[in-house]
Length: 361
Ligand SMILES: NC(=O)c1ccc[n+]([C@@H]2O[C@H](COP(=O)([O-])OP(=O)(O)OC[C@H]3O[C@@H](n4cnc5c(N)ncnc54)[C@H](O)[C@@H]3O)[C@@H](O)[C@H]2O)c1
Image (cartoon, rainbow, N blue to C red; front, side, top):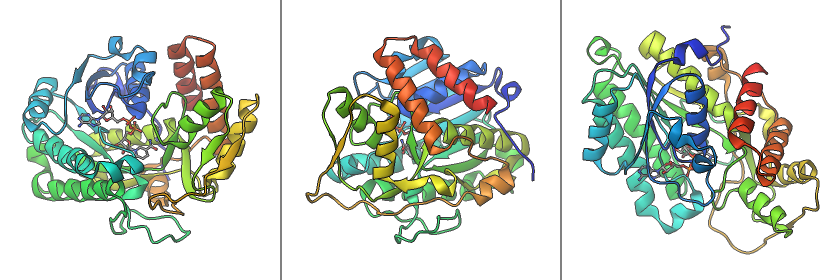
């Protein structure tokens, strides 16, 4: 089996069109790509929380440019793609929250489905791109609450609007690939398009609403107990640098080897890191140190899957990508990052250091 890692030489000087660069994962990826010498052209809405990682890392200065615009606006997106003339496209902009999707289903579908369609349609206007990675999620699969991990060929589904919109984004991506970016037409379009399904991503610098780690840190900082809804729900937890490394390795393979890799890929953690919420919280409490606790909220909540795992055999065997950090390491890195933020340290250098540690591990 070949083993692939993020290749610094590959990224030097490449132009990357990155949607969602102002978000949690997008900010980490912008920092990583810029540190590798890539020219990042970002396209996203303004950061939606205060504080937010994009501002904390002062990323505005590291990018080639940051365009604040909407992926639901086909005309604006098409102009932006034409202006960027990217070598590589990574599409991460989305409405990514399950509970918000119950209260804002139309916005969720418009952003996640039509936004993805608009991006793919815009790519038909350029011939510079050699590799495109569309980021969806582990939740795109039809979840039948089984314990075994989902594999890439299994049906798309999704109970709630968020999960289902990402299943739809997968189907749109597959249809565009077959219709306009197929292997048969590769010599005309030269753009190999893949989709990437990651697990539940955790890391320093996430201030989103309704996510376990950000909610926990807010509670601990306020000396209040964390309120947990689904203590036993199992998720494939992984540090944010894990799926990002998967996207980068996949983009490298698409760029260098073309449509052989133009498929769906799971980038989850090792099976042993698909763990119940309660265990993750207890790990964070012991890494946090100062008084921290949790209580169970037994009231009624909208449906969320109880069990979710990704099978990563394909990425491991065919792409040579493997997860590096265990859940314990991920939690340690988060506690270190958040404490450093509390202590007003230089967060760009702390974050670059975590990227370096990850790359060398
Ligand atoms: N965080 C996770 O656990 C996780 C897990 C699996 C997949 N994902 C996927 O990874 C991607 C990034 O997630 P994140 O956690 O960084 O989310 P985030 O909410 O922090 O960032 C979302 C980004 O999308 C942008 N965006 C949202 N609506 C937009 C619109 N209409 N037009 C332009 N930009 C828009 C935001 O401005 C932001 O830059 C998403 O596609 C998400 O579905 C996240």
